[in-house]
Length: 193
Figure 1: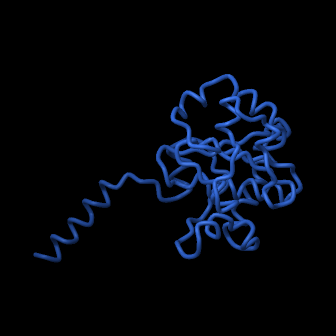
Figure 2 (figure 1 turned 60 degrees about the horizontal axis):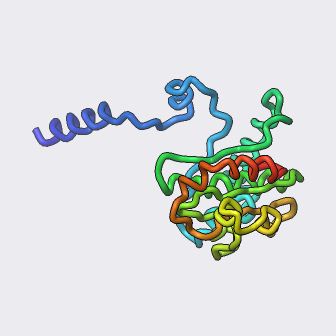
């Protein structure tokens, strides 16, 4: 009786699980092609080491995944018009910084002049991952008119990589990002984001 009950509970939990587990399921549910799949990396090491796999382990599976994404995007039609990329998620800690920094590094390693902009003004992490500190001025200061774009963009420590950090924590991040100044920043930033 206990074995049957356990088996029945396992089947019920499996039937109620509606999470996406494979690339094929993601393509079927969204109706969109998957350009690349990045394996999740289990803990271990510092946050910086975990986030910069494209540098620390160029031949590893994560670095290869980001090179595959870069190649897939390059093979799409009208690739020259595609100069800005956005990494976002619904909730914190889903891998925005991990994906954006590794993808930016992969682009810069290919020889593309690359600018990564940390527009997460609530919980910025790009500066911490790349520099182990929150560098200022950044996007907050540029949007508030306290610094110019040229003053805020800094070298990323890797050839062809520049960084616009989030800067100071803003009391009103949504309002700052809704200003027309953000469009000016994105259009004047040049390179790939």
